[in-house]
Length: 114
Length: 114
Image 1 (cartoon, one colour):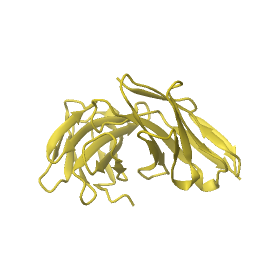
Image 2 (spheres, rainbow over the protein chains, first blue to last red; image 1 turned 90 degrees about the horizontal axis):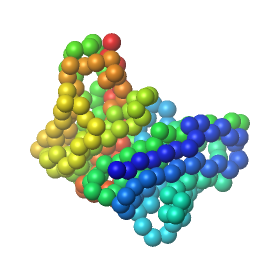
Image 3 (cartoon, rainbow over the protein chains, first blue to last red; image 1 turned 60 degrees about the vertical axis):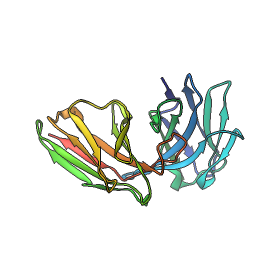
């Protein structure tokens, strides 16, 4: 079985400050890791994904994430946030025998204040 | 715009009723996924179809069923509705069925059961 824990339900931050959204996963098989963003009243949009290779993954909108196998983590970072980054962020895990199924964390609401 | 369309956007119905949610995948995508997003359960995988056949099953209730048609659109049928079925239902699609494939999400159908 696979599971994902997003350690913070809400993260408030000021504009232009750095941010880290934390994600830990649990899996008994090889994993693929994803970060999705959901803007209000919209569907989910892929920010980035880790399949293999370099543990530092760069995504859209200036976001990046680092896969850490020993700590079973996949934290999302951005060096300088904008008001427009205000949204809910979901970490997800796939892989193993679950075909395309994704297991999502509970989400982290990022609020960027001016 | 992800290219995945879902209808209707909103649905309000009464307990005990039956509804059908419709999803059209992106052009060229063979795999369709259904997810349920609720406040208490978060984002949960329901079911996956690939090229007309069921590929993976998640936490889908027996009162719920789905199918994928020859033109690759999919329908999720929810019957004997209960208050707890109120949620946002997302459809996603991907090119193939594997867990490395990016899933593109539609805008969702918000179901309210009164």
